[in-house]
View 1 (cartoon, rainbow, N blue to C red):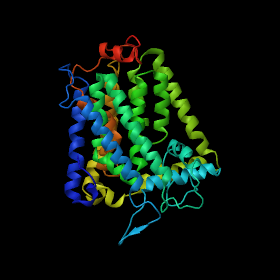
View 2 (cartoon, helix red, strand yellow; view 1 turned 45 degrees about the vertical axis):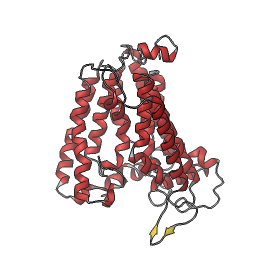
View 3 (cartoon, helix red, strand yellow; view 1 turned 135 degrees about the vertical axis):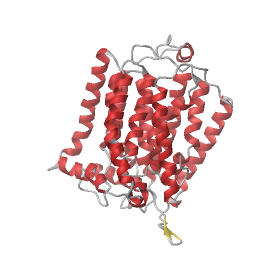
View 4 (cartoon, rainbow, N blue to C red; view 1 turned 180 degrees about the horizontal axis):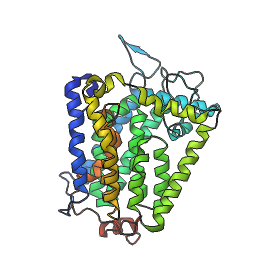
Length: 396
């Protein structure tokens, strides 16, 4: 996987480094759904040092978010303009628009209305609490985006720990939390307040965690995530297949109903649906993405992308078929198949969006075997260790 700011390197080498891991991950994720139990998870580092390193790196991430890149109305350093990311500016602009009673779609400049509705909803409390005046969303300090970035990082670390704890116990939870803050993409996104990169991954983690509690809480989290970014819609059938009986239909009903309720306010203007589609899906599909896309730099890869686009329905159907009745971890791995499949034919460089799939891959590749076996009844996850941790007789 390419590390750090790989976009500044050699594009041919970076294209190879971006796509080879994806081609490796697809069969590996399929394999995860069928492999047998092996040994329990054992870390080379004790829990306390891992927690200490996590705290230190989290503090470093917060420091980067609050001090970089030159936030205090200093738009140019030397010959280079240094400002917040476009995703931070878009979130702030959309939230300000909503606070002023104007829908973002079709009404924001510089294509800042390309995100899902809950992306802007998430920014609302941060913008509402900040006396912004006439501050420019791109050239000002951008405190709402910086505060949200810190919150997303904290939520990611907490979600990693809780998910790992439920799967394999305290030590595994500490390992997942440390894994998140060690990621170069996590720190890179914190540096630029790239909430458009962080938010999908963090919301996915919270969704996976919510689904270990109940299908109702999971459906609420799923609807919020799918209304913030588009790709979670593709694995709705996978999570539907994971559940059983009435819980399956309850999950589907809540996900679709709440999802439509979150989308509806954004369409309540004249030609609202057309403006929304033009601003989001159609606009993104029309972009070559310039230097950010290996596909764009290598014209021959357009054929490869076309093949993967044709294969994607097969990936999705295979994921759906494998998950039926197989349990939570199988659903997690097959969700990874769907996400990797979407990245293989994406218009942007997949390396830039590894955070979107990483929440799925971390638990799978760090879990030794003796993976926690969840109850057959969806929505509960009982293990002997989990029962002692939860204090709820194993139902957690």
